[in-house]
Image 1 (tube, rainbow, N blue to C red):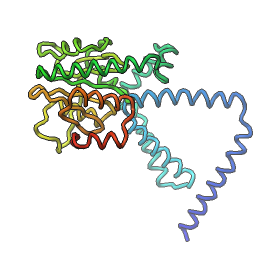
Image 2: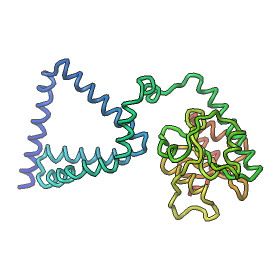
Image 3: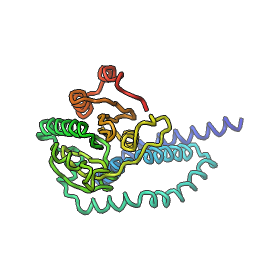
Image 4: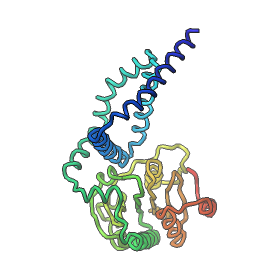
Length: 296
């Protein structure tokens, strides 16, 4: 009986809330719409910035918490609402501490970015992108084959939709045109940048000597070295495509979607990169590469 009474009371509150919405919408004026649009633009900028920092997991957690708090408020669940309210009181401070570097960077970007730069970051600049993209892939593939022949270790990361800004900031920014000669010089064993990873973004070498987080999975082939573990770790935390050249064997591998494909040749590497970078991976492609893939 008591449960039915509480449920009935919660439903009554929910119905009152639904009846309240149309009456409130009828009083909305021009400045109210402007207020909503302005707030939506700010929230979109913040969401897009945090998404580029690969903190989408935090955003999902916050959304789940907000939904739970909203439901408890509508149904008047006192215990749940009290606990979630207490979590909110301390959670705001905790989020400010956790996201301190991101908040600092976001405020700096809001003060320095031009509208043109913001537009290009949101919608992208695709003019002439396909030709440059093809040339970039060909240059990287040729460099990987040359490094493989010389048995020179290399780690090359292609950024896709997920931002790698934190990885880029760990290395030396270059902003250089992609060429096999430059890539070979970066990974030359006497070069100060040869131990890190090269990050390619917007068809240019964005940075070199970058640090990648190693995978902590226990089921990885023990014969794979640090570069391969770094590549797998990168593929676990982003949608990037990572090329690895083994220093010991010269074998070319590609890490993507938590999987590593080994023993790549010039032709198979080009095919793989063209299909992944152009977002054309499908079931047929997965079936063709199934024999080469090792699910790590």
